[in-house]
Length: 479
Ligand code: C2O
Ligand code: CU
Image (cartoon, rainbow, N blue to C red; front, side):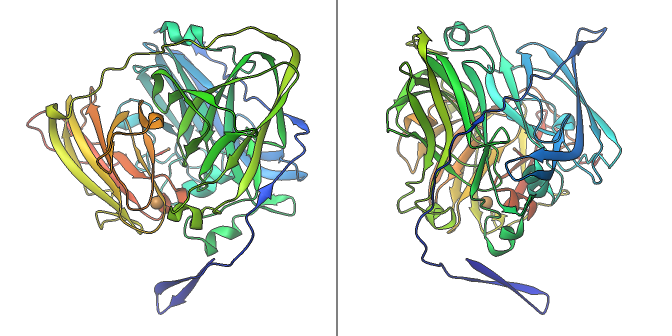
């Protein structure tokens, strides 16, 4: 544990670690998995798809009676938004919470003005309209609050939802795609309860915030999912505030990783585990045999990583039980998915380096008036992102999807071969990434890049970049 001591205005941290046996949480899998409803939408006079989201307080049954929670259009989490590449979307957000919030579209390529960062708070009782054209490959994205200093608390209370982007790639039709049936959102969160209420007490003694010992999937404790076909596609999202998961199947069988944060891979990558830090997604396809029950579990095996020290080391959790019917509809995995051209580092207009350490990026905390990177529109950049400290971090950049060129100079492993917007920054590692910053120049408005461990984010572990037309300079305005 960590003890915080306040002395003369300064804060010192004393660290020691209790020896405790690793948790091995088993559950009865006695509740059907809740599937977030698809959000209703209307089409306006200009042909735009319009969604309404209301952030509100309520009460939820999370397995501990009536728990006070927050959600969108309901008491906990939010509906799944869904739109197709090329569509114009409008989301009208109303804030019925007792405090300011924002809604950020994590993984979405869109103008900075509607990105939902901390620069554009929606006051209690206020509203905000985000409008943009969806223009990126089909992917599993998500939305969540991003207000200054209160993101951890708001996400922890339940504000999060999925945003699925569709497109016309044949691979989408070849993969399981019946929402809630064989194509299922799996939003994984860990919670700590004090009686019947959510507790954040753990954050004060922890370097990375709350690590709960109760798992919820889409807000369901102890969940199972009935499966009626040979293949089931799970859209895994780590919507926790700090915890890292290492997903495996109970019997260790391999499954197919078909997509990462920003879209499908070139072809299915067979693996027996997939690790997701906060904010990361993975689309996996699991093959089932008639009548069997298989548990999706998180089994930490972070080895020498300091991640293990802060993340419950060898802790293991039951996540979700898959229950196959006695007869299953036949299904086959496509051999190829979506061919993605590799970005070429020889074309990089700029190379930058960012070291994540403590609560700083390159020794600086977030400053809304400082621009950390001025990027020329439609150029490609290479970033070297490094964890220089002894705490796990998670790197996320707004607006773009990137490709990983190298990890400590070596080619990236299969699970990092596709589009990414969030990366687990293991201790001491350097990730060389490449992205194109296309379309949206706005000298007045910054996008963020930051650590997605939400306590770190709230404590200022963020930087800003501004995309400008060639020859232009940023001139930030807030609001
Ligand atoms: Cu998922 Cu800047 O956030
Ligand atoms: Cu961090």
